[in-house]
Image (cartoon, rainbow, N blue to C red; front, side):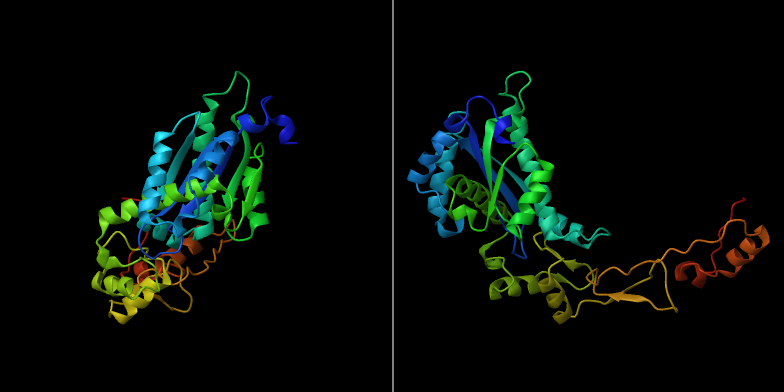
Length: 310
């Protein structure tokens, strides 16, 4: 069905695109998603130049290949884009009321850069032609189960054909190009914000753990914006560093219990909303308000009352 909807110029004149990320696992720094696209006829040039999984290339080789992409950037060559999310934003999303998973955040980034490509290609479309008609296939390095990830992407972009595989960056040169774009950008961002003392940034690196310990603020958590404070490694570092335990007044308490957290690492409590019956008499309502029954402990302990007349 997708192929039937493609533009007349099939095969070598259609684009292929690749998507990959850098910085999914580290406890330090942002996560960057990269996308690269070119006409299928140009993809062989990527392979001949040595495009491969960015993690298997030296920094010098990655820089050389980035220069090649820059020199050949455009409609006749290869183009690329990226989307970066900083460490604090990742931590905030994972610990806010929605408790977004890293996979959900990554899917959002994937969709954003793909939408950006479709906008750019849309400028080259003939009147009445969809940008998706210019793309033959989008190759993606998978998140979790490949079939599920493909289905999620297909539901958001029904006009595109996706090939989702593990280690796609080692199989498809256009995904290798995306991998290099993401890796080079993340390395540059990390280098601009930190010294070599941070280590690799991965939780298992002893230099990284030592640096995290040096950045602890016993009250506010961590001094550096590089830290993904939602990682379990950070919780362990705070506990071992004697960080101040914080007690939060829960929005709704049961049996007078209070929720104790190390900063904001404990999972959110499930809240139960209790609705009163319709038509209760005003006097009973007023009495309940006055007694403080069912009110949050912050207001009860301070004997604060709700008023509607001044």
